[in-house]
Structures are given as C-alpha cells and as structure tokens.
Amino acid sequence: MAKRKVNWILTLIMSILFGQLGVDRFIMGHIGLGILKLITLGGCGIWWIIDLILIATKHPFEDIEWVDK
Image 1: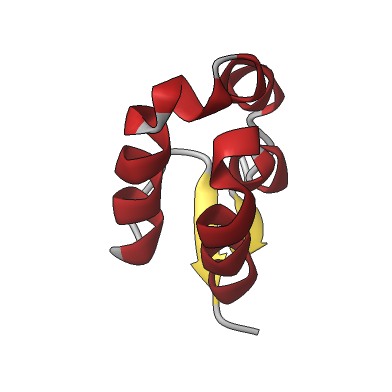
Image 2: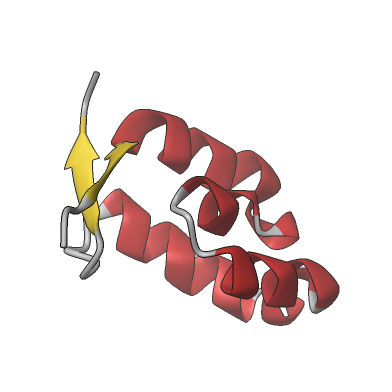
C-alpha cells in the first residue's frame, strides 16, 4: 500500500492553529480521528498536545510520508 504524501510544514502550522478542531488529522487523511478530535475539542487539549508533539517530531505514522515541499 502506498503511503500518503503529506506536507509536514503545512500540517504543523495547521496543528498549532487549528489542532483542537482536528484539522491536522483531516489533512493526514484520518477522517474518523479528525471527527473525534473535533467533537471532543482535541480531547480537552490533551490529544491536541500529543498530536502537536508527534507532528513536530515527524513521527513515522504507518500510512504517512512526510514531505517538505
């Protein structure tokens, strides 16, 4: 299965600004998790912080390939 290419910088910026609304998860193609994050407002902020750290460190998600362009 081919990995989805995702712009790392765009995802990081969107995670910082709109992470509590799940925008970062929608960008990565994780629609279900994005909806859950939207409904819970980023897991009351905890899930948002965890995702922010994972994205900032370019965590190797199973179905994501980070690109810088």
